[in-house]
Length: 399
Ligand SMILES: Cc1cc2nc3c(=O)[nH]c(=O)nc-3n(C[C@H](O)[C@H](O)[C@H](O)COP(=O)(O)OP(=O)(O)OC[C@H]3O[C@@H](n4cnc5c(N)ncnc54)[C@H](O)[C@@H]3O)c2cc1C
Image 1: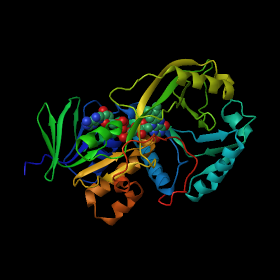
Image 2: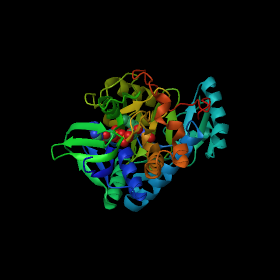
Image 3: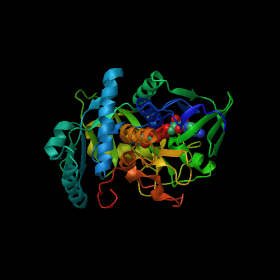
Image 4: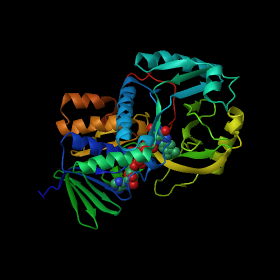
């Protein structure tokens, strides 16, 4: 057997890979090497809107996100206080049918310990003075939700991991990746890196990496967009993040009186090596129309910038985290369906426990059961991505 340089090789230095490296170091697993052909947060993590909300699908999701949230607040407090704001998250609709589902979601969320309440049109008008909500049929507010600066958190995780001895290999192309029962050999120009175990945490690139390694999983990269707007009158008091369920546009306060708004999700497969990185005309137009209707006070905003990033869908919209079926020593942490920022810390801690204690260890395994990759073994690797802030939840018995 060739000399093993690392116990765990993490492929990808987005928030998933960096949070995993941090938690592996905390659990005393090592040596750990994180490899990325680019730099930290060069993928979706550097392009995300940064909304962290507990208005999610199931108890597992809520617990994971709550854990991430607490960790982000603590990391930001120590390293970059501007990277975290607890501002709440409001959602509203004018459709009576969607209103019924939104109202039902309140009880379900409360059952999972989420602090969420009904909101009225006057509440919304108070929180968003630039808005107009007289036609709203129902609204909810999650009091504890927050927004963060995703690239700052990714860097904070990487810095902490590095201080604990994790080695980062950045900026050189991958020449090869060979997997065998002895472990993995990563071919780089600077020489090979050998590892006993490998975690693919490469976001939208994970699909191709796993397929090339002979272990394809059902992951479909798709493009989604966001924009930075500067209203003619800068906002002074931070407002909650908001999601208009009718137009599917979300927005949040951004530094210096600006607004970050997004959606523009495409329901077709994208190539992370060849996607259009700027926001497109149709997206910007959709934002402008939505603002005109719902936020007339912000409809004259200047477009500062717009951009796209590539996220990764799975057929059941739950991530894939844990051992890759039929590939001893190979693990995956991907397929977050557009919500990987808010889930990264809690998911990484659970995967680090699994890697520290072993796959057969019942506790760590149970903690990842709802996202265990084997559930989708053999599923088609081409399907239509269906991401988004869904309302339906709890119907799937696995969650
Ligand atoms: C516009 C937009 C808005 C979003 N808003 C939110 C939000 O509000 N809240 C939320 O929770 N999520 C949001 N997301 C989703 C979130 O950004 C992602 O789910 C999350 O960042 C995924 O992190 P990751 O580390 O898994 O992947 P990435 O951040 O994509 O990182 C993957 C890394 O893998 C690297 N890589 C590529 N090839 C290789 C290779 N061969 N070997 C090793 N590494 C490789 C890449 O260079 C990259 O650095 C948003 C995404 C976008 C695009």
